[in-house]
Image (cartoon, rainbow, N blue to C red; front, top):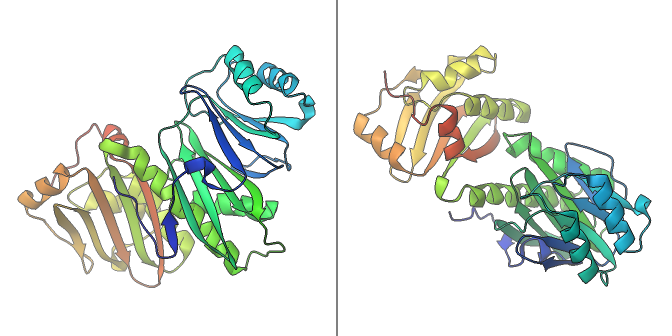
Amino acid sequence: MEPVTFSGFSFVEGGVSAAKGFKVSGADRFGLILSDRPLTAACYPYREISPLQALLAGNFSDEKKVAASAAKTLSLSEDALQVVSLSVGDLVSEKEVEESLWKERAGKFLTVVSGDVPAVEAALEFRFGDHKCRIGGCSGEKGFLLTTDAEIPPSLLQIAVDETVRRLLPDETKKVLLLSSGRVEHLPMTIQDERFFAFVNGVYILLLNLIRLGAGEDGLVEYIVTGAERKEEAIALCRALLKAPLAADGKTLLETAARQGLLNDQKVLSLAICSEKGKILLTKNNAFVTPEEDTVQKVWDAKEWKVFLTVKGGVEKALMAVSRKKKMEEQDETPVEIK
């Protein structure tokens, strides 16, 4: 699946290690990500993470025991080693942890120990004030790990994570961990700073593409809402459509949103399901449309679908994405047909 490109943001090689200050090492089943300086971190769901000397992320049978073992191997105090559960693969034995840490003890700071080296990764470069910075990342079964060399204050780093999850991720059970090495220094900074806007957009673009890459051959369904009066309204409409069965008659999609009080038919300008093979127009100017069955079948046969909802009254928009396989499993693998 091809990445989605945006003006001012270019894809670069390296994934998690693309940002300055990070190094990746490890075997196929076990990876270490080392940093050359203490880090700033933020995560979703929120938990307090102070600037850290070492961070352990993994799916272990006994995290406290593993953390104690890692601290001993690296000659660190246990207080310096914090544990965040961000499973990206199979269980890893404590012996593997010790052996891998021992091989890498020359690294100044252990940043992440993960249960599997993920195959899905991406990285972006973009203008950050007078300099260029990078955001890299990878996706796993239960979450996303992101790294950046942009220096972002801890409170704003957390806002960047929260804002991105709110705007993009339909599955809020997934975790997002964002680590900053601060190598591209740009303090002080406020929430109104143009550099911060660019950084938030970079996190959004990277996560969007990690979702797309993770879908792979299973395909993807994207939900795009435009024309809402408020950003919160656009996001709520996206979530409502995503929860509804994917339907070719239009009514099923809109009824879910209407039941939640998010819209009425008078606000809907158009609703359509599109793919590279065609477009199913479901509503136009407040009226339901019955599409041709041949067109419906062509769209269903594609592996990537886009659901467009346009309402009147504003300029706000929202986009969310989900695996097509997951969506079809939720509705017994059969799209709702025209009635």
